[in-house]
Length: 304
Image (tube, rainbow, N blue to C red; front, top):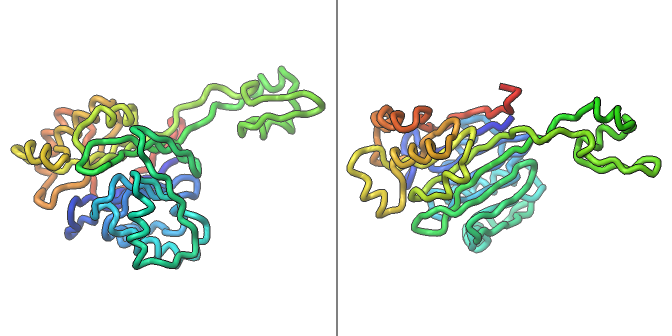
């Protein structure tokens, strides 16, 4: 199971009822954060989730509404008695940006590790998360993120017994380890079925529609996508500032055949996004509005 919480849904500036951009996931005791706008700490506290297990922080890009909450969050995590390293992932220049922000957060009781992105697509495996970062199109270098939780195949007891594999080797084989016993080598493929469908969540904001988004969101259980503008007549502004409209996001969701889409990163001028959702559902039926604190539990197929 992957828990997903959309902590903040506002673009450009925080508003009453809308914190700035941030999304948090929890899996197997480890938390991952995407973006950290102003107010992210409060949003986490309001949700009742913990700061201490945050192992990974990914950044789409370095505009203030996506990273200005970082110094305070790092200090708060330090005050939670954390000593384990935290991995930060983001476009090239990340270490320099964070170093500047840490002028007001110079002393931390844990190490920061940096992964700087430059290729069109980069993959990182950490704490059970398979993270794929993919370039999108904004006014500055910007990435979307797909989070996959893979699932191994089932252990086949009949095959194990028919090959006289000792039971004391079963557990190690089930966890992907090769075992040698009494001069015989046993490998996981001897007893494991094909990998089963895992869980996929894709998060993308501050971009024009580009092919890489649908490619990496393909079949996602949850697609969180920016909808900066819902009103008609905003298409030219979206193109000028390299953002997306509700309609464009819905078209991507349909193309990628995702299970569900939440819209986020609303313009401060978009006072009532609910007024525009019905027309968008004519393009992609399972579209809905994100809201601060909205949570989903994404389950493996046989848990649903």
